[in-house]
Length: 386
Ligand code: HEM
Image (cartoon, rainbow, N blue to C red; front, top):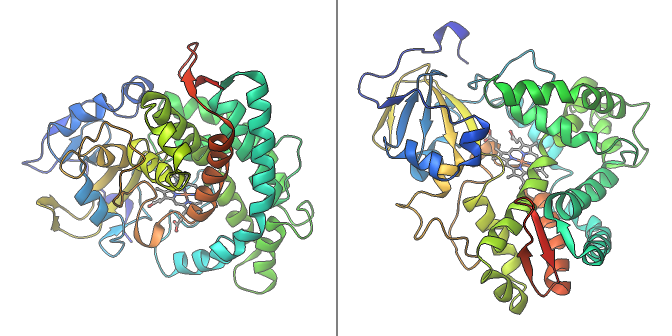
């Protein structure tokens, strides 16, 4: 643990510093060039506006993510303990983290998820057929969001009505991982109905009997977690499991549209669909930044940290690190090698089996039915499927 007044607000004497702001809409729209301009300053750069050290290369990010004994998750930069976002898992260290994680993991293992696959496949086929009937589709709304908002709320037993609000909830939750800027304020303002909806539908008297949400609440009946913690666990899946996966599927399609040579390869060898998910996690990871706070004075990969330093680990920059990846700007489904898009160590994404299953199933349906995907203009996510 670290007390609030121990957080350091002065830069280390020799570290490059900048007043650039990597968390604005303009910066995000200009990725990866904007991150590259920061990475040019060094692997670690002090962000004057946020009193945080941005880590820009693969190797230190890979080493710091799992190192919870020296880099805590309980005092992340930008994290507000009074936020409405569930105060569980990503903002915990062991032993509390282990209890919560082991409890929820029961329902997110490959064996626990396998029975849902057939329903996912049927939904994917229907959604791709509907997109094909339109011809020109918005990859985000017509494919990625349409699919994720069908299969995952069905699993959780959430009602049809209002389920799109879960995206606003996830958006607001993820924006609390960054600074309180215009993006944060806008998503919080939008999210009031979503918080109300999520709060209502994650309680014992409203969850659907037999659903995944009901099973998670059942953890409190077994005395594994408290009732309130079980509700937090359901909300954590809603916060973490929707816009990430929607964005992930959309980012795969974005990579394919930019590098169309991948599509015939995937059609010829559908096993490459798995690689496409990995490549997206490197090339365009939906969870762009993870935070940690240093608990000791120490050195990692030549970077000196002090107790109280707040770190912003930029997974997007790590994925484009030329020292780790050949031709990092190329989306290539044949690429192999582990990346950090799902994090690493004790906090590695708990929904990764589910996210992979969703992404693979919708891509398999597309690979089967769609000969070509091309940009159709009118915005980055609009494409023509034929
Ligand atoms: C492509 C989709 C996804 C991406 C890119 C993603 C990414 C991540 C990352 C990077 C972390 C690590 C956070 C850290 O180190 O502090 C994480 C944690 C987590 N993810 Fe995901 N995620 C995705 C989908 C999902 C889904 C579908 C779920 C649904 C259950 C989910 C649930 C969680 C939870 C509960 C944690 C916290 C784990 C812990 O702290 O132990 N994620 N995710």
